Length: 449
Image (cartoon, rainbow, N blue to C red; front, side, top):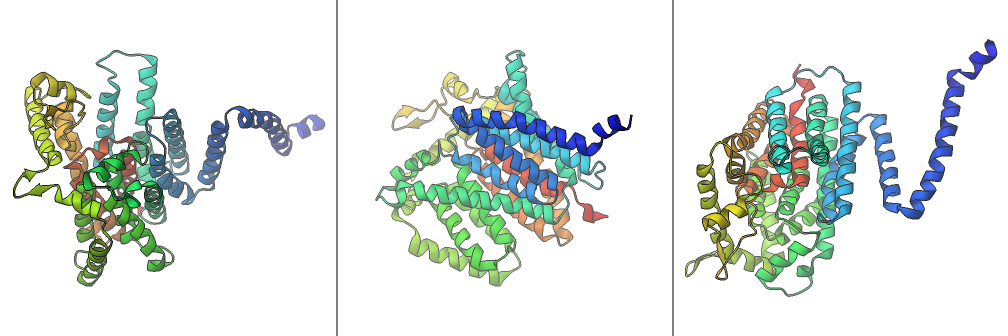
């Protein structure tokens, strides 16, 4: 009996389990290295990430914050992007489950913000997958569940994020990830090395990193705000070059909504600190006056001129805003349906003109809130506004308690709001996830006790 007990002792179980795993994993690694190197890389990355999460502390939060923006370095139209997105969603969900096991009791958290954000995400995901309108299928159910994983992470992990090191690690990861993406963009941008005209350079940016969108400009504004508003080791000696990279990328995004978001976020961040505000404004002004390329100036000058009025891009936005209002009024309760905006423009003859021809491939109204009301009806539109209202209410309460981190998040929320008035950044799955990570820093506040 004693020999049998020795065989099943814990130390023998551990050694036997390790040996069994080694004999199983080693051949699998060899096969993957020979046939599917990407899967091997993903597996090794997942193992490293799980090791960070199991160590506890701030490492997993930092890696999560950095990994999400890096998805922009993959062509969003490729199968590789879908695989990477699935891997990231799965890892963050496992991290949420680990957070629950480590902190089963989450106290003193803002339930209103959490409920509104999760409800908003569920509406967006369900509408995008057309789960109810086009009938149930196993594939559609699976893809819908995958799309909901970031919001499940938010519901499980956000109440367990305390103000302090974990939130700072999460925001620091986002800032570094945004800076890496900006650096990759600048290294690949032809508009930096060739004398392109304003409109040509603007269009050229859309082919730099896998179907570039205006949301990239907002990502860099978010990175700028997070770096500008929080201290990091090394102080300004380290922050200055990173901020210069982000500012250059913002200017070369040719996104006028990002320019406005940059201004309002910086003003809010340094409200009440006149000396710092003047220093930052002077640095930006000098950079713009002496470093801004002619192509960017041409893009800005295209917006409006006394002799011709608005440029085609601005006129198209005005036409789309009016069409979105009409679409909402035609179906205020249910909306016209997700992805049906182009079809609605064609059916009603409201497609805007460009170079004398109607433009039909416009999936949104270039305004996040109007698009939500038009396609999702009053429920989806109210939820889209409610996310900002709930987040703003929460962040103001924390700012009133002299929470510096909340002040930085407040500036980010304002930047996202401004950009959403001229585009649909939160319909982008990557930027929506970034926004979720930032809002998660507002939910759980252990220091309130």
